[in-house]
Image 1: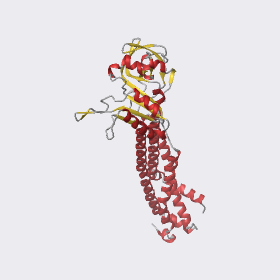
Image 2: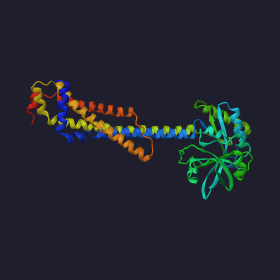
Image 3: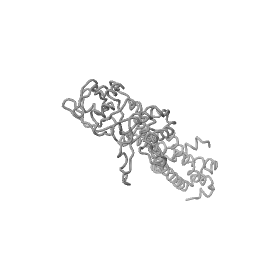
Image 4: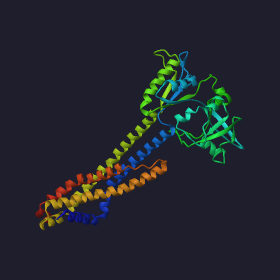
Length: 410
């Protein structure tokens, strides 16, 4: 009796008890589907984090205002403006690891075009800001250094502002009013989407830094050349930590801070923050996949139980086969093939359900659908191993039955 004969006999035995076979594979189906779904959802979340990192810009460091203590009481984070435009220019000039350092101020603004208006956030920036954020224009241009030095009344609009103010998707050359001051639209920025906190990055208006300070936001920035923050782009990801150290040393020198005195500014490495989020997502995915794998073990135990019942029910059949010449190895192969076949069928159904569930969840959660071939093969291969592992004992028990005792079994 060869293995093809054993396979045929195994399939015939499974077909006789279709309902029991299906119920036996439920654990395997659920386990494989859960593993594939969890890994796929985790990969989709990771892809979303990567998209967010790409939208914010790579290799970013943010310098923020710090705090001071008055009468023993801390005034709170960012309460005192301590970072200036000159600090940003010094960082770009004196720290070789830095590609661009962009000072920035910000404040609310009411934008008006015709009979439409929109409340948004107005940023005053230099051209280096768009280098640091890797933010290009879809229409028009970025304002020039001359326009920044001359406090020109020009503006760059985010896509959300354009959609809410203009029927024409290309408003370049139009005149808008921001807090009653007229500005010419010179460009529209490409879509950036949302930040990790859910903020719409495209709901913004950018003005030259000098324009925003002199014509729009001056009352909020009375401290001369102080800024809200400085966006710094390192030349590469490998240089971020070194750049951060150099920036801290330079700013402490410029702010005349003594040894042991706390920084009066804050430095945030955005890449590290987002990488921490990505790492937590990967860890959670691994834990969920590990929990889902327990279903495979439970399914394997179910297969072993059913196969033991099958051996008991088919004792006379086993004795008859042995009586007409079947060897112990033939009986072992037949029952082992039955167990593995159950596992593989459950694995195939689980793969289909897992892919369908992943697609449904990704669509509902608006995540990218990422299905790794490795996770599919791993789940399917593990289901086959479960069949072999939990099917071997019942198959071995069947193969060691005494033919005479088996024929006498009632």
